[in-house]
Structures are given as structure tokens and as C-alpha cells.
Image (cartoon, protein in one colour):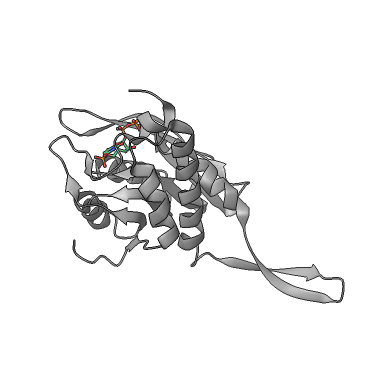
Length: 212
Ligand code: PRP
Ligand code: URA
């Protein structure tokens, strides 16, 4: 895959360890859900290195000091339904008061084209740092459309986090949205003929929610 300035692939041993378990077809729903959350929390820490801090005055037991804090009210989380829901708690572990919008998308299984079926975003989202989250970045169609929807609402500062990405999908999103920072914890090999990521982990939504 080409190098893109707006793409960040994690290469953290702890994430590798968790992803090995996540991929295993014998990993059950509970553990799968917990791993998605844990990996998302690690990714959130890593992706916030450039977050804006505001000075605050703090009084320690010894003296007054100026310290720096994140403006928590300036963070929003937007999962792409369904599977993105599994990542919301992982971001909330870091930013418990972040508000949550939802964008519903499903892929047409024949054409692999995304169809939007729901969009509800919090008021004022255009002034927030938005974490768009979806564990799987396959052809990239869902992410590109979800980012278009956020930009239509005026969002300017968007980070997209996916747990597993295929080179085709990462490239498509990076080119369509060069201003969006794309964080992927693992770069996989390719898509199969049905648009599934290889080696991948199967259908993330089904594994999270116990459907088929
Ligand atoms: C999966 C996944 C992404 C999308 C990725 O959702 O969670 O949203 O596919 O594929 P793409 O990059 O080719 O667009 P799916 O459509 O299976 O819906 P679900 O989450 O409701 O299962
Ligand atoms: N969506 C998934 O859940 N898994 C894939 O491999 C591709 C798209």
C-alpha cells in the first residue's frame, strides 16, 4: 500500500496480542465484545496525541498551579451501525462525557455499495472533534459515505478509527478524505470476492451481537 500522510497504522504488541484472539473463530461473543472495547481504548489514547489542551488553574495541597486538560465537551463519538456500536464504550472509557451520534449503513451484499438508513447527530457536532468508529474498513464505501454525511453537517475535525483495514479501503478513504486522520490498528492482506477482509475476523456485527 502507498504511504498516506493521513493514515496511521498501529503496530503495538498489546494490540497484536488482542487481535490474534479477536480473529479466532472460537472466540465467543462476550470476549469478542470486550476485546473490541479494549483495543478501541488503546487506539483512542494513541489517536489523541494532537488533542488541544486548555489551561486550568488547580490548587494542590501545596500551591496553585496551571495545568492542562482536554475539553471533554468538545468530543463526539459517531459509530457506523451496527458494528461501530461495539467501539463506543472503548472511547467512553477515555472520554466518559462525549456525546454520541449514530449513522446507520449496511452494505448491499451483491454490489457491496453502502446504503444509509439512519442518521442522528448531536446538536453542535460541527464544533467538536468527532471520532467516527467502525471495526471493519473493507472496500471503504461505508466510511467514505459516513464521512460525507458528517461533512454535510459541517464537521471539520474528524478522526476515523477502524480496527482492521484492507489496503483497498484504506486507500479509498485516504484519497476521498485527505483532511481526515485515519487510524487502523491492523493492516490486513486483501479483500475476497465477497468484500470480506482476509485474514480478517469474519462479520464483525454478527460476532458482536450474536446474529448470522
Ligand atoms: C460492515 C462493517 C462496515 C462495513 C465495511 O458493516 O461494520 O460498516 O461492513 O465495509 P465497506 O468498507 O466495504 O463499506 P455491514 O454492512 O456488514 O453492516 P452491520 O454492521 O450492520 O453488520
Ligand atoms: N464487514 C465485516 O464485518 N467484515 C469484513 O470482513 C468486511 C466487512
